[in-house]
Length: 286
Image (tube, rainbow, N blue to C red; front, side, top):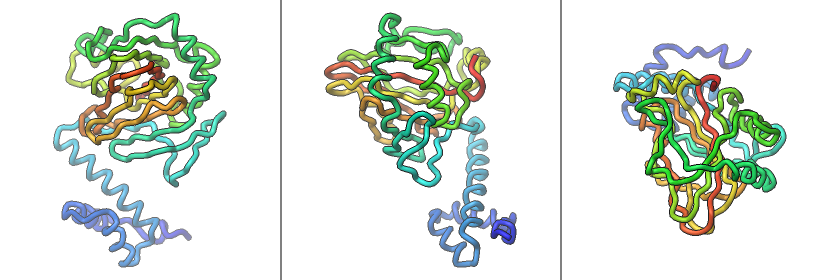
């Protein structure tokens, strides 16, 4: 019989864990105390994780935050160096938990990067952003790139990459928006912004009908500028260099700045920057 069956996580234990958190005791200290009291490590960890998750969600909603929703989640429980993405082994270069940011190495091959760029070039136009006032699209002075969208599974290359992303992030292919390719020349940038749709904007209900809220973003680097062009997360002072073939993923379980997913593309100083962006929705994107 396993320890999870012989030791029960009682309401009293959950209340004690919450009290320790409110008193400012760190997770390691609380776990050490539980182990010293005879709790099995697997039971103690499960009790802490489940209790604190519920507690934090209750506190968030009391403060008026939107309810948290499930998000894409690469399998990093055992701190792997590599992840199986189906047709390709992808390296985990860096992982952050709050915000949830993961930097992947070698997600795309050089040939795939070149292929996306060549397919995108004839269709490039001034990049638009979602108009949250109306639910449509608009030119935004904060975003000075050129770009285009592929339809989901539009061609063999896009279909292969989308299947790889779905496996890597444990999220259904049909929940993804079409792959977007963006081109930045020297002086162009995308100022810091959030990718989720502001629930207070009048156009958001129209946007959400197509697949619900955005819950994750994957930015894939197709070409390397000589200088500049990093993906920046100002709230946590993190910058991800645009290394060709690599990618940065981040998720946001509620449409609120508390996710710390404010991000932007810093200005390209020299050379050209090419990226492909995949936005992931709660439900099937229509």
